[in-house]
Image 1: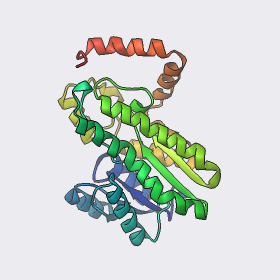
Image 2: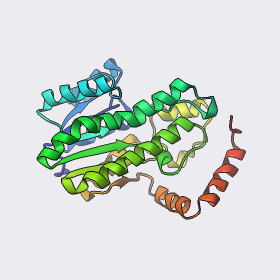
Image 3: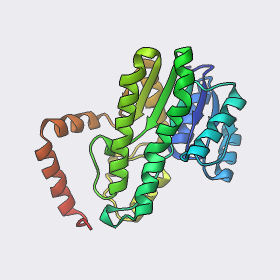
Length: 259
């Protein structure tokens, strides 16, 4: 059992399936009290029943939706110790992405995190503890071919998590950001459907990603990399940005031309 989360009160957004559901299962197995959220009420209810946790369906991105979720979770749990801002959307492809797709990507992938932190941090500062976990992506550290809204908004999600950690760590609030590459989720199915280049050898299960998060919590690691090779890519990108972009452009040329 992961003693560091036993008895903790945890909220996980986008947890009707995929990575969020695996997080919920791992936290519950480690002795935490868990609320899961999903925008689909049927999926949320079914997963909550199967996992033996509390389900609160609804929007976890808008100002009002975040306030309702956090208020309801506090009523159910008596407070919140850990918040997993896990819900995410892809948001279209390239310059053909619409204004609404760009806006939705930033609402769900970035502003949902900001709004949750605005609700949670004042109370956490008063008591001197709290943990904020962001599910971003390796695309937020590197970039990706295809979805511009996803890559750009995930960069912003990583940046917000970094800001949270450097601003509040000394005051008892820990922030972590999970940055996997491909994971076997409905989002991956969507990428396959539009012909995305996916190496089957690096596709992980959501359960493995959850194991990596539990380990990272125990070790207080900010950057959670279920694909450890991402650290090497990240260093290479920082050390030779021009070369990195050149290699990515060569890969782009081998795949679908940008639109």
